[in-house]
Image (cartoon, rainbow, N blue to C red; front, side, top):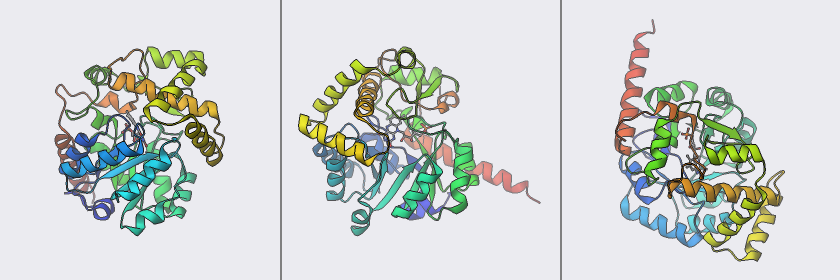
Length: 351
Ligand SMILES: Cc1cc2nc3c(=O)[nH]c(=O)nc-3n(C[C@H](O)[C@H](O)[C@H](O)COP(=O)(O)O)c2cc1C
């Protein structure tokens, strides 16, 4: 067993987190991870507040272990989803892409907050705001990593950070866990790895696409959703890279998002304007572009359209080569066992 500040803080057995992934980390996979002793995180980006509430209640029926809920603060539904999370007293709240105004409220009911961070200066700000832990995300990651790789970013933050860190971006096995602990982190968060498991609800076409990919088959740009992000190279991502900002499809996607999230036109405009004020350098076009990514990702994840949909996955696809997909429990136990054996071997090399 590996005991760290993160296993102690959250009361979990293993220093592993299932990264919150929109459309992917549904109650079934979240509870499978929690029941196997790691931290499962439900992602709310496609949910109305009412759906978020229902999913939280569903998770509670499937596990009695601590679990987390991820909220992207740049989305129009974020305020309602945060309210649902607070009402439900979710044990661990994980926010990304914005500045949280709810940390005290989570602490008031005994919950903990994890900030997702991809820049050292944002980590310093999050720590000042009072987060309990940070998921530090490197360039290798699926979706929103920034320029610095995990190898560089994690030790920079561990040098001064007082809160436990969760290393994210490119971690998929025991050697990654051992490396993360060596870099000063207290756990790993894995997205792509858990997306490629038996319990993962993503379409078989997408699983096969990722298993066949190499470490060089992803692309990184801000053209996909207005923020620097990593997706797999396919027809849809190459079209966006070539054509630049997809004005028409972004606005049709924004309308689809409005329908999906059951927002009135006024709510959509009001929250978008509010978010633009809260976030530096964001405009309405960026909001529309973000909506486009959410809709195109669903096309690949649930409909299995791996050519016209956007496949969000990280460089770790190149290292995940299972002939038969493991269960989440197998991923967790194999990762810990491999890390333990690496750390024991390294210990024998010290004189
Ligand atoms: C399909 C998919 C959807 C994602 N959705 C979210 C999300 O809703 N919120 C979030 O904070 N991060 C999201 N991410 C990023 C992950 O939380 C995590 O940072 C990333 O997967 C870590 O890198 P790795 O894939 O190399 O493990 C998503 C990643 C994937 C693969």
